[in-house]
Amino acid sequence: MAVRIVRQPKQIVLLGAPTSAAALAAGHEKAPQALRAAGLVERLQALGYSVTDMGDDPVAMYQPDEESPRARNLPRVVAALEALKPRVEAAVKTGGLPLILTGDCSSALATIAGVRRYYRGASIVYMDRDADLNIPATSPSGCVEGMVISHLTGRGAAEMVRFWGEPPLVRDPDVALFGVHRLDPPEEEMLSRFPIRVFRANDVQRMGAVAAAEMAVERIHGGQNELVVHLDVDVIASEDFQATDLPGAGGLTLAEVRQALEVFAKQSRLVALEIAAYNPDRDSDGRGARIIIDLIASALGARLEAQTQAITAVDASAKPATVAAPDDLPSTDPPAADSSEQVTPASGE
Image 1 (cartoon, helix red, strand yellow):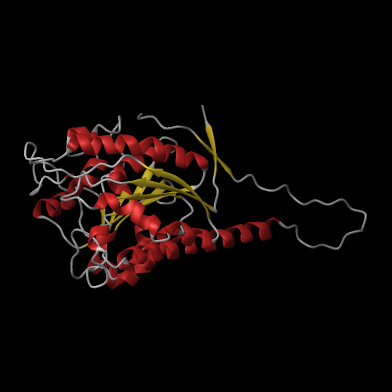
Image 2 (cartoon, rainbow, N blue to C red; image 1 turned 180 degrees about the vertical axis):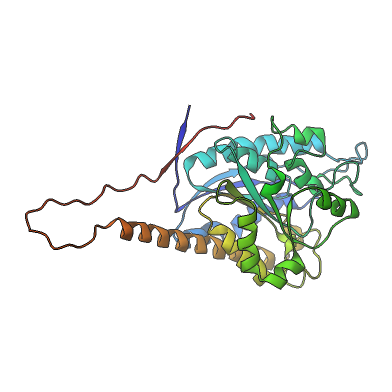
């Protein structure tokens, strides 16, 4: 049965995924509550959004797992995904924009699976300092967070790949890695073999953040598929941001991340935005939380402005041309356009 989803341009649906199960240490699971406490909801409301807060999933904590050194904590990671997926589905169905605050990056699987409940195709812009292309056989740490893109594209740990019944969740050409600055040799080798779009940090800086972001959307069929944007905050150079487990020097500046994120947020097919890898334990003065909230606000403020301009343009084009006519002629104004979108649920449950 077809499901009618009516997009709600001024509605944000907030979801928390307090998980560090796929990470290398605890701390990330505190991110959703910390960002709320720092004023995220109030900031979005001040922009003009209505915010529905759906609360948090159960906490999924990192724990040492010496019995599975190649892919640690998989049962905990999968349980966290299973908790988040139906809530993303419910958020997408409202027509609002799901804003997922997550600890570790593995949540991207649940986010895209939730989107694909209603849309057959999805593309992802994955803003991250790391490529996350390892698999259990190549991972130096067994950290599942470092395998997210492999799992999305149908490779890696079987438990993760099978999370979506008909893998892959995302086709290789529909993935854009944006801001990559750290790659393991096996990841470099994979990128030489698979048609994943890669925008390394130095390429973004050479092209300019706006031009690179626009090209990334174009390259991953952003005009045909629904778009998911994932921001791992460690993509920001450590000179500007430290409140994450693996900060690194060089890479994208805070200004470049902001510019790119605004481009992505303006896309009409954006259907979910995910913020990952903030660690409040490394943010004693709250500066990191304020930076993240500023980034989200600038991106979603740009989105609201772009949508308002688009609606104004449609309204203007719908007005009839002015012609000289007798006063007694009836009005011929066209009916208002139906803004709803007819969506057929996808297979792969």
